[in-house]
Length: 554
Image (cartoon, rainbow, N blue to C red):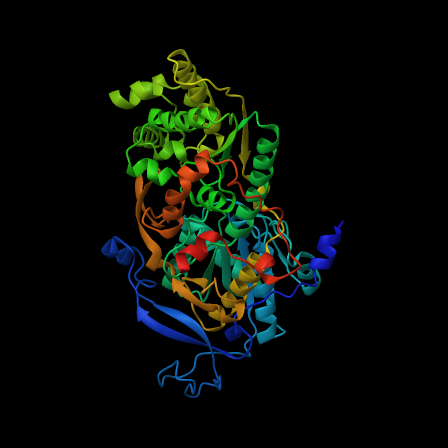
């Protein structure tokens, strides 16, 4: 393949990782766990994987020959670490791309080979469908070396096929038996890791000897909890978007004639918009979770933007930036109710009939601009939800704010000019060369997954914590996926899923925004221009985590 100068130089970058992963490793078990909600329902659905303990990887002096563990982690029990056992492992990239996926696979490969050179890693092609269709390739050292520290998922490709039918599980068993695979690693987001948990439960029930381990991936940042500090790819994507926003703000401050409305990826939460705001300090950043909590209407949002535009115009500042979360529409209470009715109405590919909506939802639907109404009824995503990335919310806001400003001008309340530009930043960040933070984090996740496999775990997600400290001090381990689950309505039915993490309105990142938003709204000199991601240089420039993580760990 053709390679850039950065790719050639960066191939030799050796990711930093926790000190516990560098020598002999033992799994230290913690307390038993329970799901975050709906405990009885989750326990009934996952009798074999519910209640397992959190585990931490620690440096150990285990004999690893079936004798008593001497490191204390086993509390006198027999050591189950089989360091010399060769294993065939399968890996799947599931869902949307995120920077660092190749390093997860590199870490997994290196971890397996370090324990036994005879181990093999097979990549299933095109996502979960590769497992059930028997499409795969052996990932050799020569192949792996081409993809170290690179962005994208192109080493084996990704896909959004859901593994939820019994015939799919059985087909997976058949394919794994043919290849001698005893463990599968699924690299994905909340839905993909929910599938991993379902798969692990089924394979335990069938006693087929196949482990399943998950890795937390999503640029949206909504796969996080007390055990998962951040999902991989979030750091890189936010830095890419923040560079672009900073460039736009510098242009706006130079030309002084445009208001830029910038929609940012993040369907179910506003983590990306909030992090980018912390990195660039725009004039306005809408937080969907705040809109929902305050029961704001679309008109309320428009009124607030118009207020800031008019206040800046009084200072002769007819320019600015507005950050808009991709999923904003779903957080406006009335719109959310409408979308839920549409999701249920269109479940299973049914034809749309506006008369199937309740009276209130029908009235709201018919009041929307034709283009927005049409986008709400387009094809659903694989989970049965409206594809909010197709809803051009930034254009809707531009149109509505323009009309409101015209009314204010007629009433003598506004004397400025409102020229606009619109942008959507999404795909630009999904396959970027991973930041040093993501390269290190992902490699550590892959190494951790190999240790969880070697330790006999299944139904776990690999975790690396303490991420604001130097990588040597990071804490690697695993958390039972059932611990993160609750019941939610999907395609008109209640199903077990990993609970999404929304922006915490009591958390320090959001509170920092609130404390500074009025200053950022009206000032002429608060813009920050982050510039491009740096890979070589001082650690304070190259290895920094997100501002969100820093504030959360203060």
